[in-house]
Image 1 (cartoon, rainbow, N blue to C red):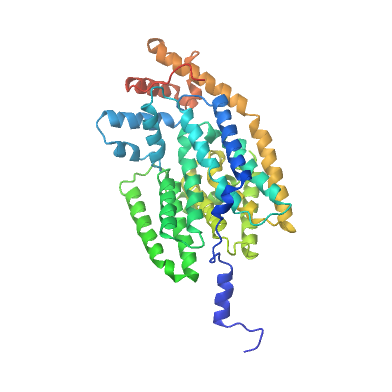
Image 2: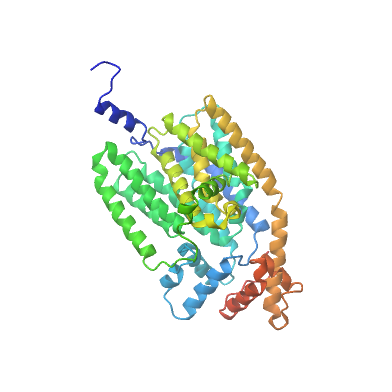
Length: 454
């Protein structure tokens, strides 16, 4: 055979070289770095301080429905599991409902405890993420800075000050740690069990969390390409995944929307996915956000072509998990048009951008331009969305005043006058009366928020 001709075996080697089949996981020993611990501590304190300053102790939007159905079911004699497992839209927010139940057992109900717990889940992931930065260079500080700006972005305020968003923080935390344990160089039984537990933690957050189980299948399959000894773990993971999905959809009820909208409107669904993908680094202008999301996908393909995923199964896993979760959400929500794409999905798409930032190290040529572009977009988004925090807090405070007025004067409620009119800030504005009824219903069930907690 001539030297410039390739045989079947050569083609197989070339195909394998693009896959991260020789894993290199973040080293556990690097977790002891003082920089990482200081970052974790400052991040937790800063986030907790924001919650104590701007968080309000009352249910908001979908929380009224979740709490009403939860406590009503418990009062009617339903088991705790059946009450927390009940479907809400396409989700089963087990962890959020369970957290509401546990908080109701405290002497004073305060949702800010849950908001702070959510931030703890977020900042616990700095350990594997920072440990995945290979080597030390003059650009390491820039990489760490961009990751921290992503964590602190005001894009997350709608999640940060909304306690039920434990579902998204659980998906974030479970996805990161599942990828971490499954990418360990020597996948022990303990690593496998920890990775599976982290994936199930995300699974109990909501439907998008089930993607973590499917992502684990792909990661184990990639390991089996080069190491057949992991086939038993792959089969066991497959068994758990099939069981979990069958249980999730065993009595699943359609929410009334078309399940095949994406099939008949593929372009609209793709644009929705790109806009949602740019939630962290985009703007409020849909065409620009769609272009930024598309640019991220192109850069992901470019990194794959450059073989930057070689021996980096961890980062490949978190990016793949974010893309798959974004696809699931796009299929389920694209019918609502682009307004939904600007919603609360920054926690789902953030691993995609952080993964690209980590892979751009060491930055050479085009990678430097990408980091500068992402840094610029992060700072623009940071500045613009931070300005709306005070206004959002003021509106929620008005909603809190309405809540306490309803509790104190149920006999004189008029949703068209103040302060009762401000209940529009606790739920959909067009359903003020419905929100008031849920406040009274929870009051009858013994669920009340103390007045002097702000």
